[in-house]
Length: 322
Image (cartoon, rainbow, N blue to C red):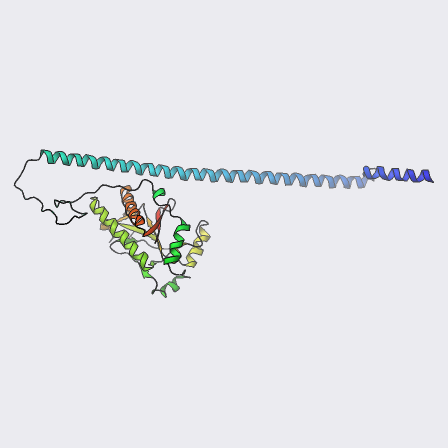
């Protein structure tokens, strides 16, 4: 009896260590099928992980390529503008030299001389002749105008109104907002994502920008152009609609507070064309005009009147009143 028990125990141990021993043919087939399915699932999981890793690598490569492209385009743009500034400075120096040579070689005449001005003027020299100023611009647009959302939103909250829900609500809040339609100092292009209302403080700033820009064109001897405003007050509904089409749109946009505008830097409207139907065909793209606008904005920013962000992709200066 004792020997029989020992045999049973030994057989149990062997079967536990070798589960396939003693199994019928059908059981063996089922076990093999289960093992094959388990191995297949593991292989599929490994394949899925490999595909996900490959897709992530592709996404990283595309993002890096896009970033490099944007940086290259910005560097090329700044290089072109730097070359234009240097050419303008060279022309100004040559003109000044020619003027001095002409004055040196000029013979005295009996013609009436311009009457000297009693007070200095930016438009005329001390002898009464028309003054001509050279274009200075800024060293780098990105460095001169770095004020991002986190900076501008503080001033928007301080000086702006509470966000407007929709256009109908904006019509009922005219005690807080002023209408800023096109006027002699700037042009409001057709608006699809905003409405032409600002808080009074921002409206005064916008008019000063347009006025200073026209003054700068005159003293530099260039034809009069208006700046073009591309975005003003945005309602909550418009911001929500924009976010459906543009994932980079900010939910808490400064435009909702009536303190912020976008000014195009690659398009300007010639004053003589303002009576024609507005279209991109009667606007002007001139690097010199962009440089002069940057001078105006840089002056006002240094005076503490506004924050300015140079937007590369949108082609505009994004600014908020301070």
